[in-house]
Image (tube, rainbow, N blue to C red; front, side):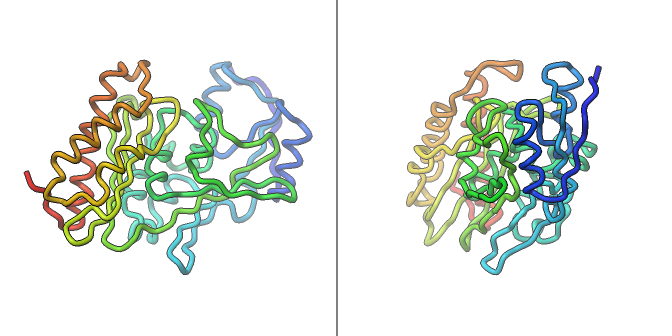
Length: 292
């Protein structure tokens, strides 16, 4: 049963920040409500005031800078990101990931910023955006700061946002030339049990760069830097053994927890499997054939 609350509709980031400061713990940001309202209906949380960021002009937009960086307003819906022609052409892995978030109702109403701020451990975007080295802009009245996306996540359902701060923008830099990204997941009931994102840059038959992030396995999505180091500068000809080792290291570092989505051991196994498959998919999209 959803208890009564007041919905505030601010016209600016400063107004929203002031509302959060005024009402403190009794207020919560609302950016689509696909997760928040479910928790409120179940009686898990209650807020007297919801501050709707969708009413703030400009927070729902997407644009691409001259250097190729994609800037996504925090209130852009998953559907808007998925269908944006610039995203589909230049950030194909992001468009594909967004097209597979939950279901069409969630994608139509739910926002990318809301998804990141709710910090549900079993969510898709956090892992993939990290291999793009995405950053987030956090604003409050009279002040703003920019952080790597990885720093936003503190724990399950917990971020580093201060009480009167809003996430206003996600910035996604382009990958270097001869690069590709891929995101693979396994799960049930529309939530991933395991999500693995990779980005690879190839040059002269080598992995010039390799990035790996794992989500849904532990408390927060994380970059797997030890696994990345194993792959960097390796010859593609050595990739079967290198990917095997990278998968083992990522599984070990993923901080897997046993929950309703599977045992820790099961998730670790899937991390290694999905890592290998994701790299093969990314290499194939670059026309690079991995030796068998």
